[in-house]
Image (cartoon, rainbow, N blue to C red; front, side, top):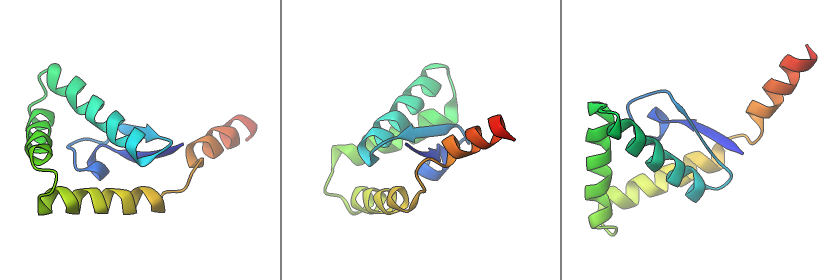
Length: 92
């Protein structure tokens, strides 16, 4: 499992977003945006609106650029870092 922050994905906060695949992480990030926006967080509402606009035109340059950057960033993440830190903390 890999982890990025909401901010690393283009959002406004440092909440951790997890996923085993890039698609799973994107879906979890979208869920996080929706939940925060539903609670009235204006910064998350703004990002959610921007993402919805990008999805209306999946062939747009901005949508393609975001997807390419996200997939590159996801591929560069180390897997299991959080699990390793948790294991170390239990042992250490």
